[in-house]
Figure (spheres, helix red, strand yellow):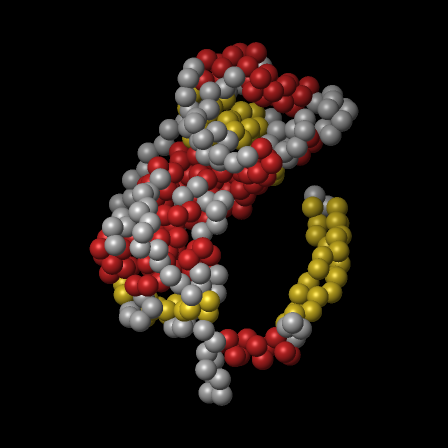
Length: 347
């Protein structure tokens, strides 16, 4: 359509004293694109272009509770299309439509609607859509029930005051029920988001390693380091012998640090000052006799302490670390070959 043009540019970043250069594609708006944008936004010469928003666009089929989310978001749009409403008033509107949702969830949905290009104006705590919306038809014959995973996310969301709510995606990924090919993609994303939660949100050192013969994620702070294994199971996770042996191998490789064993020498990614190690499993929720397997791994590897944590407790823990309710040193002291369970209160 001639609205955008692209060109390749070299981008250089420095990591651990080494410069890495990669060629990336950059996109630029053209003059015709600027004209089209002005028409879309409207001005004195042009009426604002209506925006087509279809019901099916409001949640991906990949979402575990897509039909409920579409109904919730469509009714939020309906509630503020021709009138200003506060979050509380939107909640009351949804309740009248038999949609029970928290205020924080509504706030997140409004942000999401703005991010997909719907103009929502906020004034004195009240919201109103300033676009003309076309094509949105809300089914009247569909009865939607909130899935357990959506309820869990709402419960967690209420407790997250400083942690970015985008990390609620960890719940979806931990409970992934995808087919094999999609499951692999979800597992990879689970690792990436876990690494970013620790490094970008909580300022630990670390990175996602993943792939064959390497742990999923490693993190460190000062002289403490943790080897992390992400496990995505919708019906809960019990550490089996295969998982225990795999973690034991990682711990052993890191302790011995024999050149070329394994060939990728993943353990070099720990800073040289890290000398006190722990191990951690992150999953949907724990079940079975996982504690005995944690003890087995620990005893077989010179009493290195380990732990397991459910994704909801991981997010609560992140909230406490970021609010400095607990320190990073205290976090590393929580490893005692058992599940890490966190309770937070927001006063």
